[in-house]
Length: 318
Image 1 (cartoon, rainbow, N blue to C red):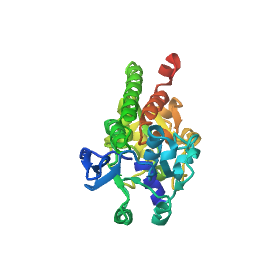
Image 2 (image 1 turned 120 degrees about the vertical axis):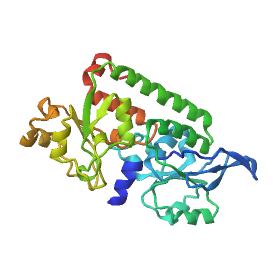
Image 3 (image 1 turned 30 degrees about the vertical axis):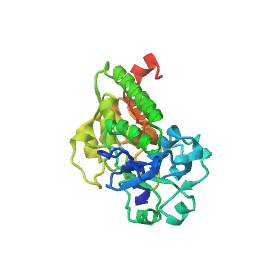
Image 4 (image 1 turned 30 degrees about the horizontal axis):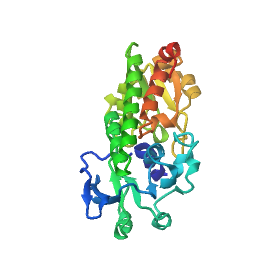
């Protein structure tokens, strides 16, 4: 359960290496290059890897828009889950799905590149490195800008620089369009009741918090000091008095006790909260709350629509 939760929130889910070394020609000549990953490891790759294994949902989503499905040896099992995956309608094009860290199962896929996030316990990676299989470890993105840089970085790793640049430009364009609409509205505050069992999610320094900033939304949880067990209690909701409360439309093991819209509206202790009084309890997809790929642009738009529905109903959301 804990592994699934970690997978979702940080990776469900992550993959940008800040400060990575630039590619350089290796001893293999023009057909190969050497890149330094987030762990400081030199990784020698073919010009365009053909058997890529993705170990996080974030790289699942990015790879499906960077390379042909024939070049992907495996995605994660989360790629098939429409509640959290942006590629569930297309993930069936890749036969194999990874669940867990079985080295034997991964080796059976004959990978020529393994993409994995730095939040994993990475001891088992030595098995692949000892066999000469390239493993690229990327750093978790914590800002919208990190994701933009990540697009270009991972595109370089898989040898699709031109496609990566096109994705980056589209990502940037879409976010700017949402910002232009949201900035016309009087700013509203929001509180997301997500996380495992209703723990505080999206506090200051998180990718979700930065997404709120781009959506023109004030994230009230950025003001609180929390640890991994801090819950969004009734006291916090009352104290922060948000204009909008966001609840996830997707749950998994450990998240079932997140209160529903109906439960929040019926709670007599919350009647003074603005979001309750105005009925602004909005269900937001897991794909938005837990995204760490270039689909963050979609997430920023969904957050803005959830908080400023009138602005987008006037003009449309496309």
